[in-house]
Image 1: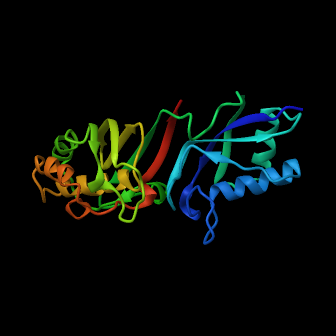
Image 2: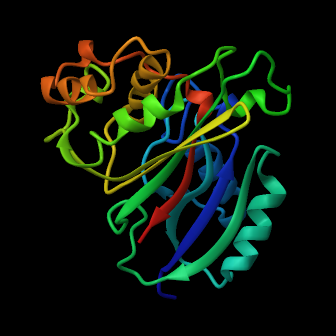
Length: 246
């Protein structure tokens, strides 16, 4: 039988995991999926994701694929995986793709959502998915500062130290900030993101929200290419991978 390429859309609450990619010092989403597929197929199956998510980060639509010699249909893999996966990981869709599909290399961009709850109290049902800041933030100042980041720029100032990438130039096509009561939502869309880039941008925008900096200073931070000029790295629990574009 020819190999089938099976594409999965995966949801997960990242709280209890060390991110997507297999690593020696903690349990990851990729590791659990591969162990479940080994039980289903009786062989070791490599699962490829659209990209890494960090420890504690959530996903509503992570995309992955695997190739296997099988008569099983995608929906059968979906049902089998969901019967084995823990309750905080689920396969929402499964379909067969062309052999040249690759979850990482075929993707054109991603959308992330970061959520802050700026209120004295946050519900215990919201808390695992937001950064709780019990203070008032100036959302208009953050929106103005964010305008300097949209477009194709060198985002070196917003990259985690110690990263090893060929270039720190990235295209950010959207950075939208909305507020409803105490909940502030940041939506990022772009062709690619550096390690911790979204979380560092949010941490920096919070400085503008606290009015520690004037909005025009964001341009100076961006052009400095200096991580020390940007703000803190926002906590992982507020970040969610919403969609991968192909």
